[in-house]
Length: 198
Image 1 (cartoon, rainbow, N blue to C red):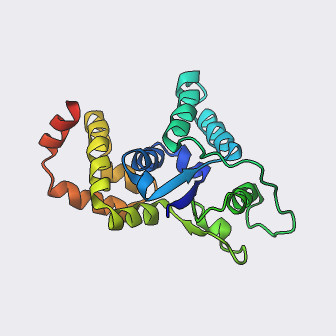
Image 2: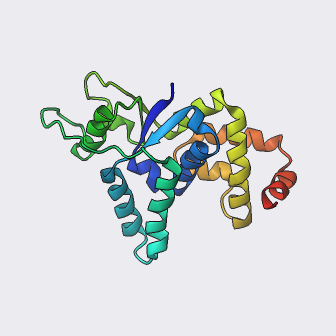
């Protein structure tokens, strides 16, 4: 049975975390987990992208939305939930995430703000940060991680800025970044890059 994962806006906002999460889904993770989203989560993601980048084009902002939806696939949108006003939320702006998770029968919420869920009693789902989520996938399917790592290398190497492990570390996945660093030490990066160009 697939693990149902609701992806929070802070994951979708980060280019690094968004790319890894969506690529893992598309490249074979859909045999392990199914990713879900809500209009509230998407609106928050796009608002933050626009606020941080006021001069991006519609294709850059709207295109991000369209690519996320395409990666998550049909049937990934959770609708029809209501907010439980009786709960004392640590962060009221995450009430929609909790309510959608319950309504959508979610097994796991993927968020960088796990502390916002700690005080909610009797959660019916687990809360994972990006580091733990990526490490869980690596433990279960290291070949999937390597496949996505190869594609990510093709993106990061020409940019001459951060390395792939640095980008993951900066995005809040330091343990996973260390695993990727170790994988890269034993990899033939030149061959990987040549293979990605074909």
